[in-house]
Image (cartoon, rainbow, N blue to C red):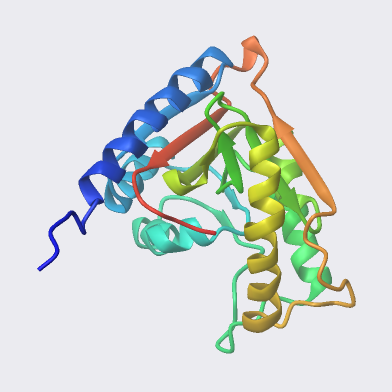
Amino acid sequence: MAMGDIDLGKEIRQYNRERAEMVVQNLKAKYMDGHFVETKEDALALLLDLIPAGAKLGRGDSVTLNQLGVFEALTERGTNEFINPVRTNAQGHNPPREERRAMQRQTLLSDVYLAGTNAITLEGTIVNCDGSGNRVAAMCFGPKKVILVVGCNKIVRNVEAALDRIRDFACPVNAMRHRMKHSKDDGLGWGVMRYTTIIDGNQPVEQGKITVILVNEDLGM
């Protein structure tokens, strides 16, 4: 009988932990806030603590936030107005384009904007691609505060590796998700990389405008 390790779960979690700690330190050096938690449940609890009662919330399209159950928890709490451009009907389809666009514009004036990210580098640089640009626009300007929840599977070495991850995996899978689950085409084709942003920090006077919660789990895509 062959002998050897078959479960590397502890080692992988420690690997993620050490990389995440490096990211958190580099985020702080760039006037952003960073937190590391072990589980989705911890991430949800922290996220709810960071959202003040009465704050107007906007959201970007994010499988990670869906996996945390963020919006069910916020609905149950019932203390925040919530703008949700990517809500779905019973068939899983998004609202019509013009209705969705109007809500996306409203999110730019939210107190707190919630989203995930396509990749984050060890140096604390946040890299995203978008098909319509609303999500990346809100990350850069408009909302008073931006909170991003990120699985450790999205930590990469540098910006080049981030773009490789996005091109080779995140965007193709996301395009398939929209087409197959949400009937979201609108004549726009498969393009989900029309707008690319590289966020390398906040201005010093905006310390903490962007907060990143890193989770020691594989989340999103």
